[in-house]
Length: 429
Image (tube, rainbow, N blue to C red; front, side, top):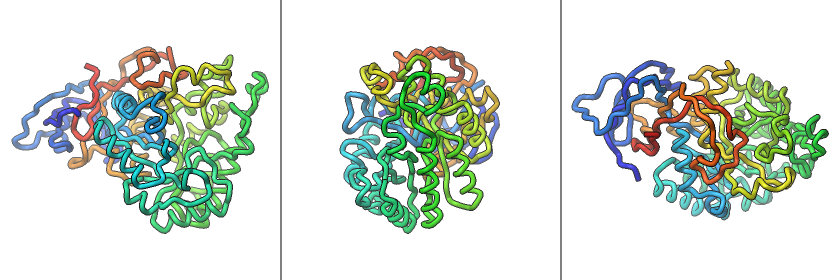
């Protein structure tokens, strides 16, 4: 584990959306916490100084969906490898969905994950617990005990809850303790045989498509239950224009509902599948240009509160099958921030808004003490150079998963240092 030191981060542009700060200042860290911004506290002596001139100092990023693959799928990746990848991407907090093996449906599993993360010490890993036992969609998990064990939210991951009464009971249980439910909207019957967005491209390629109705039908159902139960609910990885429009309408009616989007849905469409590029096989599928543009607009207007990596590392063979048989998912921890900076370059967001969508936004949804550079807060910090240009070589990713459709893309902006609880856990020097 990296050593905890007195650290002076000098001359950077501090962007802290949680406190509406955007200024060139020095920042000081001691005993794992931020102790001052601007002027050094009395008696402060730096053990290490980081030169951040012409760079940005921002809160460590908070990623709402990260498959670490451990426990259960260590041949794909491990907690250690993916924690190192998160640190290289400036991500200091990762939410782990419950579909590990064993499933996170007991306090013991939640405690095991938290213990292993603390042992590695590179990033905070927050367990998201199963909404139903075994993710089977039949029996509610003991949500209160799981919350007491440190689970920040509840989800059934990719497994649908087809019984509407069970979903209602789950929402009522969560609402009674003010717990957050994370929903993945997908009708299993409409998407069962599909492997990409249903449209012109799927017809041309001869691949079974997944209509956006598979998403909107479940969004509509769940919104009706959210309105009835008053639960705090969050829709994960929304991919279609029709779905986000339903969520915006619900928010305008006063429902406590939020949403996030995966970074690749803001940059890619079904046309990027080209000639059966399996690196573009994801769930939910890459959709149309219209959907991408609508998601961007919803993000810019604040109706989408967070951008996640939806990190799903795979071994090489997982992407070598035919497109319909290839395993879905992208390795995205190390590219989340730099791909987000493309949205700034294209005028979709300004830089503080982008940083908010990856730090204070998701932290606020989870009601955790993260995503801020407030004096006294934990020193989870990302320092990045917004102007450095580089070419993505997927074989050099720290993650064990090299499955990215962005390989060979020219990118701009790169993390230079990451601090986790006041420890330097990544440095490019």
